[in-house]
Image 1 (tube, rainbow, N blue to C red):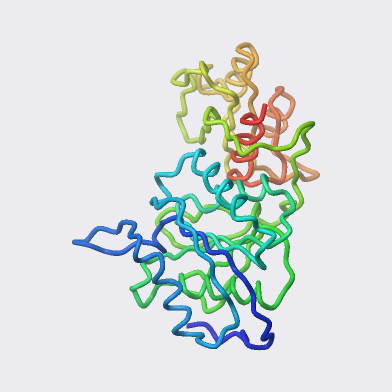
Image 2 (tube, rainbow, N blue to C red):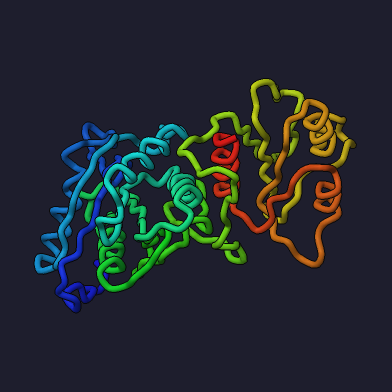
Length: 316
């Protein structure tokens, strides 16, 4: 359990909108299987009130859908955004969205890019274990979000998350957050990432996300001939941690990203590369990619890049 925050320093009643969407934080265990449970969603508020019974806060709840976040589609982001807008966020001091951990970084980026500069803070709260498990971090993450709404005047989209082996909650900026490493339950933010990335369009943004962004991850022996570019709005190519990918034709033309970029250009499919940190020196392969005609999305997480492209092409 976290050190008790000073919820009662400000006795003014605060109004918080809590949107339950499922995920592990809204799940229970039955016969060895973890799955969403409508009743479990409200367990979070029960646990909070038991731990902090004197907190001056009024919770309003919504439950627009209940899914495990691995089953998420960009269409879910549209539903979530519409639910937030319909609830008139200006009537609340803060918004908390419960969410699964698998696609947490993507939904966080979606809310960041769509709302741009929300007037009230939006927090996405997750749990690495179901709430009835005494080791779960969900209540700590939720309590931290409530504390921030009560004590600070923040604007933007945030993720409060306590890594399971740590005693403190870290507040992550929306588009700095990366997905949890495989086989782990920790979350981290990427340094040197701009937190002020905005989308400048000629018309107001609509909550429309393209489902035709092809995301390709690099690995040894990646053969690009397996990819069909028909019905693709754009390609986002992931890079190794040093901002690189295979640029040699030594193993055959179909194994070189440079040749695949040429193919994308010939088929009029834009191709973007991320993540990579812009620096004074770069690997030769990175320089070749930059000069090849692909668009390098500098200083941007892969999740933020994917969501921004999905929103951009969904609006165009």
